Amino acid sequence: MTGQDVQLERIDKPDGVRWCVRLGKRTLMFDDESAARAFAAQLHMRLNGDKLSLVPGSDPEPGP
Image (cartoon, rainbow, N blue to C red):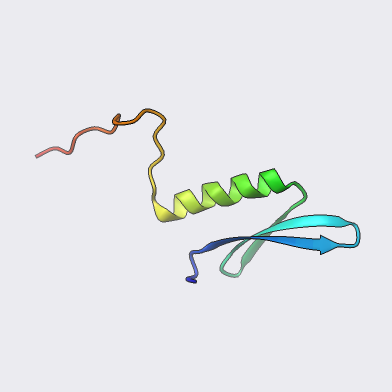
């Protein structure tokens, strides 16, 4: 695991479940699992530089 890995962890507390998204030393807590998963997925995509396209093959052709 590197410092750029996004982790999603479930934490059981006496007052309910919390979802923890971690990136290195940084941590963000969520009450809602779907919000935590969406945030973790967006963070992962941004950090890894993956392009997300809704239309297949819509990327411009590389120039000369």
